[in-house]
Structures are given as structure tokens and as C-alpha cells.
Length: 126
Length: 137
Image (cartoon, rainbow over all chains, first blue to last red; front, side, top):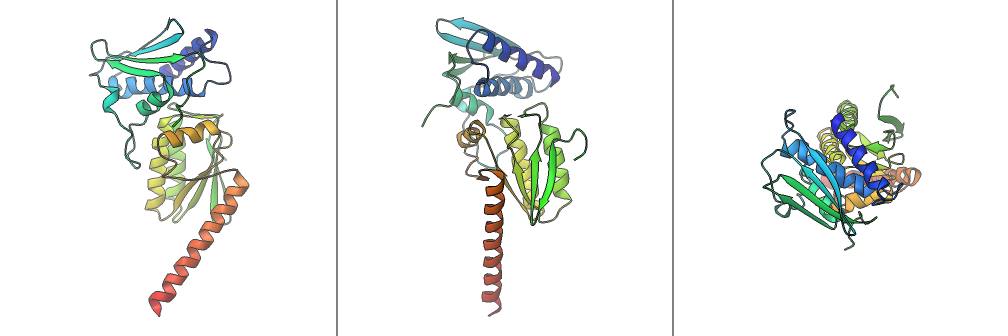
């Protein structure tokens, strides 16, 4: 979990330094990064310390692409729906879907891909 | 409040306020400690009426929502209940996105929350007394 904290801080710093997120307005970017990393460690790698999680941040035109790779069995974000109120888990991917422009999981590369525009990691209205 | 604790409990009449002092961030790194502190406190207090005050918290993730559901369950097990107050706009939005604003009673600022919670308890007590009168009649 400490390694996750270091990775999260470093990824968030990169987003701020590259101008994708304004300093002081990092809430939703931080939320999506944390949810993606926790998902990769807990559900992807099933907390196996021998498995690794990798995060990549790149630019495609005016879009920032954040890729989080795990070494797990894969899943499809579109199959995950908001859980019943009293259900304990399952809200992380739903939060990412609300806050990012696009989210997808590639089962071949075990990669969760999140796309956001500059300063646009925020909840969709409606 | 013990050193290193994330939550300070203060009794305000029938209500216990749990002020969250988490260095502004509640996330996957400190969420277990947060949950454990609150659950340990609740388990020792039958019928606790707990108001968790988040005015110092600037950020939280879904791991905290899971922990709040556990705390809520523990409160119910001891015949008490859990309410929340002083969430900033971003945190409140997280509750709305996940529909958990429908699960928890969420108040505004601390003082207003205490007043409203106390009023709700008073109405609850009157309703209980009225049901008892009707049952005994």
C-alpha cells in the first residue's frame, strides 16, 4: 500500500507538471488514479506482492491518456454497474466512468485506459 | 484524543461527534485505521448516535465509502445510528455519484447538524412514546 501511495503521488505530480490538472484542483484526477491503482492491486493482482502494477501517462493531441497495467485476469468496465446501496465494494470503476471522458480495459494487455481532457477530470452532469 | 488517532470523539448530549482528523486526506492508505478506530468505539457504546464530522477532510476515495458502510452496519448492530456532516462539495458529489447520499443522512455544518440530529432524536422519542401509549391503551 505504501508503494501505491508513492505511485499515486508521483502520477498526480506528473499530471500537474504537464498541465493536465491545475494544482489545487486535483480532487477528481487523484480519485481516478487511486481507484485505478487500488483496483489493479486488489482485484487485478489480488494483492499478490510478486505481481506488478505499471502506470503510464501519455498525450494524444488534446487528450491525456493514463494507462494502468496489472497482471490479473482482466474484466470489462462496462459490465460493472453501480452496486446496491448496502453492497460494500464495486464503486471505484463507476467513479472513474463518471469523472473521465472515456475508460476501457484491454484484456490482452491487462490495461485500464482512462482518457481526459485538460482540467476536465470532473463528474459529468446529469 | 490519543496520539496518532484519526478520529476524536466528543459527547454532545445524546449525540457523539466523531471529528475526523486525517491530515485532510482519507484514502486507501489510512482507511483501515479510520474504520478500526470508529468500529472499536461504536462496539463499546450500545445505542450510540454517531455524527461523523468531515470538515477537516478535503479528499476521500471509495475505500472510505466501504468503511462507512461497515461503520453504519456496526452502529445498527448496537442499536444506534450513523449520520454525517460538513462534507465539502467534491466529497458530497462522490456520495451523489454512488447514490450513497440516499443511504446516509448528511447534514451541513457542525452546529446545524447537531441541532437537526437532536431534533430528529426528539421526534423519534415522541413517536416511540406515542406508539407505547397506543399499544398500552
